[in-house]
Image (cartoon, rainbow, N blue to C red; front, side):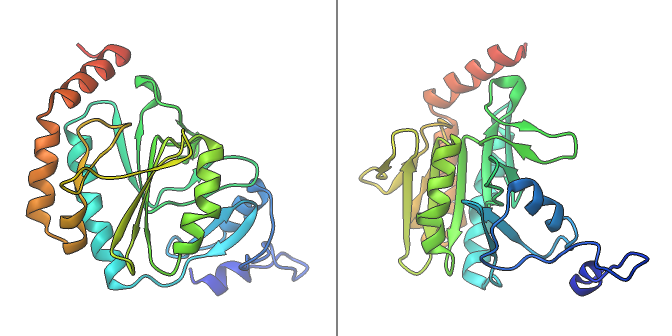
Length: 236
């Protein structure tokens, strides 16, 4: 069903069943969610600090960087029991916040994670790690959205700024920026062993990205993290 068809569905009196969303609208999360359900899946809206934002069309630089990072999170998830990666998943963070981040990594509830899955298949509560690939959205990602994530309890936040060719990394639990090491490797704090070579990411050097991640997965920190997850989750 097209966007227009979805929004112009009418009742027996000819009245629209669902009012559309517009940039800048102010809604509670529940009302935003109700209206958002009328749209097809390829239309993206987010509710940030109670304000509606409609995503702009995504260019090739966004798509390619997104894919590189998604590959790393998928490989990390495969090597780490009790961890789940997500791409553009709706997250209900509170009464005025429902973002749809580019990527997220969370610890599953049964393994001690701080988010849960709702009965209708959404995430409620903050994932431990959120990643945004920012081009036209950079001002929102580095300010309003960052504030929403911090207030909700997201621990670690990474923003890939395409125009600046830079990776911004935040410890939201301490409300401060962090820096990669001298080799340009970002070593995630909430997910030990998740090592991201920021230079290789900006070059889109997949082989180098995977090589560095594998070093992280072979580290003692990752082994200890896996052991802790298995103990909490009762994995034998």
